[in-house]
Image 1 (cartoon, rainbow, N blue to C red):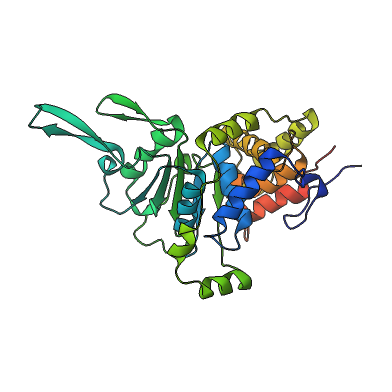
Image 2: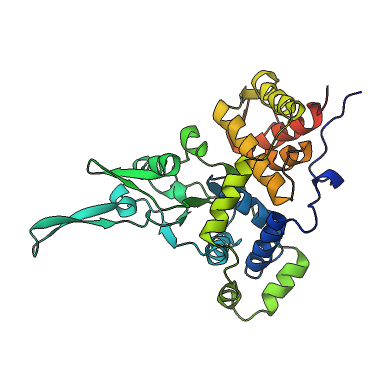
Length: 328
């Protein structure tokens, strides 16, 4: 008898964290600290940590004022990361991001002045408001962890984590990200409106800045590096890999899909699932890990066929969860 995938709203005891596990405790501390500034968004915070621990980059699509910038600042404070914010505008140039060499009259030499990209956590705010030429300046940095400026390759700090934001509603004067650049983001998520309890607490606080200053560092760079290394060592059984392959193959052959997941997309799904398992206190991946991560890893990588009325990338993901068997 085959077992079908669970709905997104369902919970599974198999995915519950093991009490006392060091990694799940580290995650719980980080979520608790960041939640001081971003109220009522524990799941989105945990997903952001998963993206960072997986060595990927994060795209947040949401309306203005939802807490995208607050999440970025709070992550940097809780994890002790050097932080830079880049406000993307139509007149921003690649040199404004990467840096430039300026002639020093005192030394009669050119001195390189690094741009804001040379930081551990980058907030690329409203990335779709700048030109494709400037957007592409991020490509090498996000993929290779290095930039080439004036013929010289310069390494970026570790860890290197880009959080890009864009407003999905107001598209006037924007430059939509091409598929090649969307694919550089391991995950895409939305924060959404706060619940009533969280919004009441927001209304009762003095200022949002006060809450942000309460966030204390709870992880070190060494612990982040260790987390990344150990997440790569999480095991996946042959049956689990079969399930992932069935999901990937369904996107390539199922009706309604304009195109399927690339090998990079399937690797991203596997990498994030391993990290999520470790965050939950396990050293092996279970199907619930894959199902939890799936929408955030693959939704921005899928497109519905144009003539399929009512189909969206979100509905395609729900079809994957509902129609692909966990076991055969």
